[in-house]
Amino acid sequence: MEKMDLIPMSEWGLGLGDTMNISGPCSAETAEQVMETAQGVTKHEVDVLRAGIWKPRTRPNSFEGVGSVGLKWLKDAGEATGKPVCTEVANVKHVYEALRTGIDILWVGARTTTNPFAVQEIADALEGVNIPVMVKNPVNPDLELWIGAMERLYKSGINKIAAIHRGFSTYGPSKYRNEPQWEIPIELRRRMPDLPIICDPSHISGKRELLQSVSQKALDLNFDGLMIESHPNPDKALSDARQQVTPVRLGEILESLVHRNPNSADPQLSNKLEMFRERIDEIDENLIRMLADRMDVVKKIGQFKKDNNITILQTSRWNEIIQERLALSGPLGISNDIMVEILQMIHKESIRQQTAVMNAVESK
Ligand code: PEP
Ligand code: MN
Image 1 (cartoon, rainbow, N blue to C red):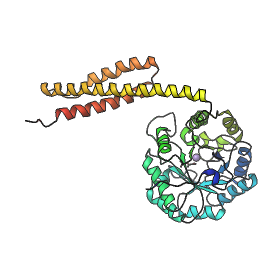
Image 2 (cartoon, rainbow, N blue to C red; image 1 turned 45 degrees about the vertical axis):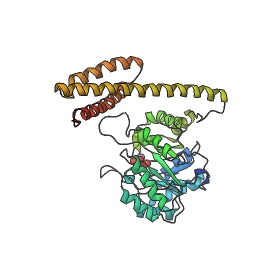
Image 3 (tube, protein in one colour; image 1 turned 45 degrees about the horizontal axis):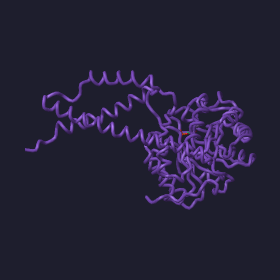
Image 4 (tube, rainbow, N blue to C red; image 1 turned 135 degrees about the vertical axis):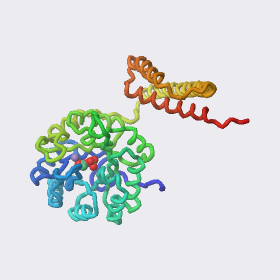
């Protein structure tokens, strides 16, 4: 698809600058709860109010949202505080009801983004409507699917688009509710430099204690804003209780964040940074040459194993490599997880190269 020509947030007509902080409850529960949250969070640097009206829950019999009545509570809270409001839409009915109530920004949730049929239906319903739409990453780590959802909206004429990074689901134990896999939004930024990317630390963290550090990391990666869930009484929230914070705590988190500059205006500082970068370039070049040297040796081993009829994989040798390398890398400050990942990638390529040598058709 051709490049998307997007309208910057500051021209969305919602009084936004170049960044956008969003807060409000995971779910609208009562008119009072939405209003109280809105009045609390707008004392801080919050530009847009959120509330979920229809909640996509993993299992039935959990609270699935108050439904359409909540739209008016959200809109009223926006009017009382002078802020635009946003909510999640997952089907055509949601779109029509949200538009009818005058919701200012829509978002497509992580479960919906995974489904091109659902996204296309929403995009078709929005044809000719001038409203900003935010697209959460799909629950699975698939950048193309994420971009595809935004392209579907763009093809329907939506040109006020932002992405929301809310992390990716994993199976098994993790510090996070949804793994951030920061390399994915970083690649999205590289591919679509004009697209605002908002971080949702609440759904990444799954618990309040991590909100501050995930938010700071997002700012340090030049994200364009944060979406953080808030509730007057988080422990009693009907959804996502563990990750919601009071408006007061939200204020503390926002105030604690350090806003650093993407580029330094001071030429002396830029020079220093340039020097570090040159050094990194040099080290990367060495790494590449050393990897190539390693692969040459691997090919020789492949030939040796072939000539002597030995199999490629010797598990004991592979275990020994991992143990010895970790003993070296750990004290040098490289985390074991990362080192194992790097070794596995190198090993994968070694096996591929050896297999190619062993199974090469001999020329007569
Ligand atoms: C939400 O924002 O409350 C929500 C349901 O998010 P996600 O689609 O990221 O799970
Ligand atoms: Mn939530």
